Image (cartoon, rainbow, N blue to C red):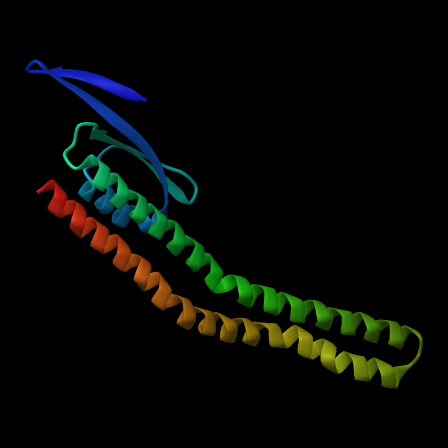
Length: 173
């Protein structure tokens, strides 16, 4: 989609871009795209994201280099979002699995009680209760370990964005 304008006998053709960004990345993303030569012409908010409508002169100097830097920034943003989601995914899966196993033991305990096998009921109830209590603590520990492992990777992607924006600023100056 493009638009034409006539200013002082100059023909200008703009390019347009719509970008969906999570709420927490709006300011960083806005700054990044402005550094890459884009102008924000409109924003619209969704449930947990914002759509930025951008425009840029198609004849901007160093356009090819800016497009390469923009691609690097977009890849880094995608990697950051993926890594942020990964922080809790393993912890959630681990705690859910332990909770399901605990529920299985509790079901066995109930059936043993109904069959009047009280010793078996007690033996199955102990890991059952443990399987219901333990997931919270497992989740917190796994989340801390995951955050400690992933934060350096996230910081590396932020560094990629900052370096690309610095290069873009030098190209536009």
